[in-house]
Image (cartoon, rainbow, N blue to C red):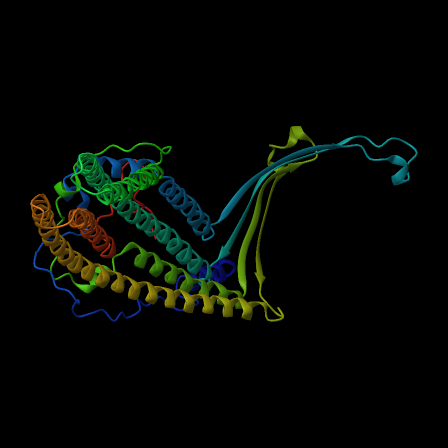
Length: 474
């Protein structure tokens, strides 16, 4: 008996000692030693809800609603469930597969067909049993398939994190843009009100003979020029509201407002951020899992060169009489071993290995490209954060200068030293300076959003729809 099962025991032992294909080795990454732009504030901002630092409760609620109702995120969660199921299917191939079977049929054979003139009695056939099949993973092909499937599952997990990071950033960006557009519309309406009053005064002066008609025309022209901007801002506000509605998973409609843009607080930015910290970005983690999967699938492809050992067996009871099915004499069992190996495949296996190796090289290049892109995005965000702040400060000084220019030009016009055209020019410059300041402040806030997105910080698991998969064993 020992001699019969000795080959089986040896096969099982060998199956745990050899794994076909290359083991995964994490590629070396050339990380920057320092960044182009330095920061002064020191704060650990990894995995924090950075948007709450802006101190706008409406923005916080919008992001919460997006994490609950966004459909792209729901698709990502469904994909995690899908790949979790596929991982379970792949892992099950390492274990015996046991199936039950039961059958019964009654047969009436033709006597004439059998050469008899008389009727042949009816016969029964009943069977109750189970069959088992088990492929012994001698070469580790099935373990490589499990490794690849697990990496696919983890890639989907990181993909969902990337969607969360992008989703939070998009909601914040659109809300900041919305508040900037609201401010633009407010300034434009105030300017239109001022120009409407200027037009009324110019027309009255003309009617009384104190000025020429050209001043009336100039005033009306500037009034209509600014008045035409109001529907443009209203259209952009509506489109931004609709974009936010889609992000939070509701039908397009009006969006609640919170603080004004100038009441927002700037989030703190980290100082001395190590380059290695950027490697935890979910898109980089996702590409590394894709690389691990592609590397393992080389082993799966190479495993086709080796023979497969499969154990099979059947056990149960069978009888020609249903009543005798459960009697001791109805017992039966069989056990066997199958060995199947390639002899001639016309290059099929070689082609599969070639394709797997090429996929691994492509995944490696994609992983490295993603890392370089991440470093570039972070550098761009640092530069943008610094330069938009400088632009905002310059635009603030410009608004002060334009306001003073408007005040002096009105005094000079009232005293008869300058034509009315100078007042309109001052009004135009003051309006444009205010709009440019709003745009600069908007861009400065957006640079902070891009910075946090680039550094991979600020994603989170939402308890209602993101489920941790740490309980899934490798």
